[in-house]
Length: 151
Image 1 (cartoon, one colour):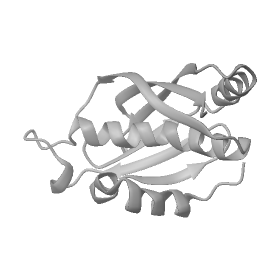
Image 2 (cartoon, one colour):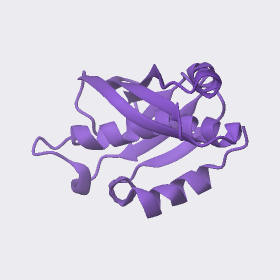
Image 3 (cartoon, helix red, strand yellow):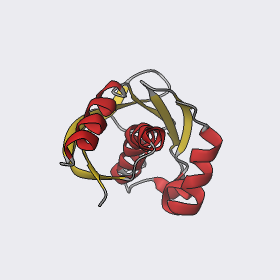
Image 4 (cartoon, one colour):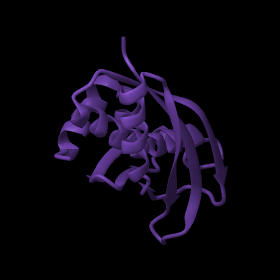
């Protein structure tokens, strides 16, 4: 899977400008793992002087979605993707640079293969964990992705 973090970050600038201005940046991606960072700043904070939960959600979703996008492009098929459901837990105030890591890339290929073979939509869950600069988990997000062949 040939991917380029610069292209994904440019995609964010043009297609997800809120994420770009909040500081969401893809730092690493391969077939199994994606790493996205976002830094706590005045612009993306809540009234409690920590990062707004929705900014964390954007970064977490991007860490899962970039791998889905890359795998769909690799398949050379017209496949739609959508988050059907999500949940999150927060364990510490998010301040400083938060790094979201998803290591669930192995789940995507099976779902894409099945939707291509059957034409039916498929769902799968991916997890992204956000840690602060001290390595302490601040939040964990789970996203239920749906993929289906476009007609």
